[in-house]
Length: 210
Length: 210
DNA sequence: GTCTATAGGGGGATAGAC
DNA sequence: GTCTATCCCCCTATAGAC
Image (cartoon, rainbow over the protein chains, first blue to last red):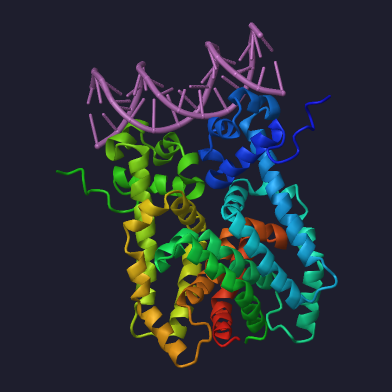
């Protein structure tokens, strides 16, 4: 008793150091292309320690993957289930919050979606993502708006897809878009900042479109 | 002289068999997670032959990657540069054509974008993607429309991003969306079929939004 | 808990016969 | 061109000292 909870400041415990290094590596290169040696080196510990703490590369990956998915869902849930905000406000919040979030961690979306694709059943069945979305205030408000004739397309999945598409896709295609537009990272991020304001306007326009 | 161009029917030459198997494997699992042994087995040839034809896994990958990117760009160029179609018509064509294309090969978008991310400079500098888009009829028509006050947001990159986002992203997030919506593949594809008609309507709505 | 050293296996590539 | 057999490196995981 003395070692376990000492360093909670910035570099944290050994276990946390390993997880931080693993998170960066897995998010950047995915499971297959990441080597445990790189993680150990980046965490500034020995390779054996990694297995001491996490038993195997796969277990370590599962830990990181679960935390990444969980954090994503938690953020999502917070916005979609806020009973006090209108549907329009929720759209604004999703755009603003996720654009900020992804600018900080631009590799997370493609990482998540790639790895989910490799292991679809396994990963998703453990998290109650379906209920989270289908029972959300967001979905109820969408149904109301459809009933009142404020939204023409009745399928809420299209609405959610459109919102996520406009927010997330540009980051997934970032290198391609920078190639097309001749932009550096700073210019690209400025473009994404624009979208915080633009996406809610566009989404609103699609609601009444026919 | 007699072996090289005999089988052009369906299963094609040995080289083509290897490429077909490699294409499927790489598209599905990416470079790192694909084993040359799997490709050889799937192509129904010996592992040594793979190296005889392509010298290395990496060279084989580059071949597949280049062809995939080239095919994508060629399709893009054909639509964006058709001088005879209006901007609205081009939007319709992109939606229709790419949704059909991606339903047939649902792994290609995330494959392309993942691997581009791993090797951004190298892969994109070889293809004239910037000129292709920036000099396209599509971009000129967009500029015209902006000048005539028919489109409020003047940056053509936003326009292109929005179109590609709405078309491509749902496929990238397919397993997640199927999880949320409780859909099987057939139901998902039907939803994508809807979008062929819906996306042009939505895009048109965003043009005039403010 | 942390290290060094090494076992053990998998995967890419090649030698050489046919 | 195509095969079998094999090399050899690299990576994960573990044994065992401290």
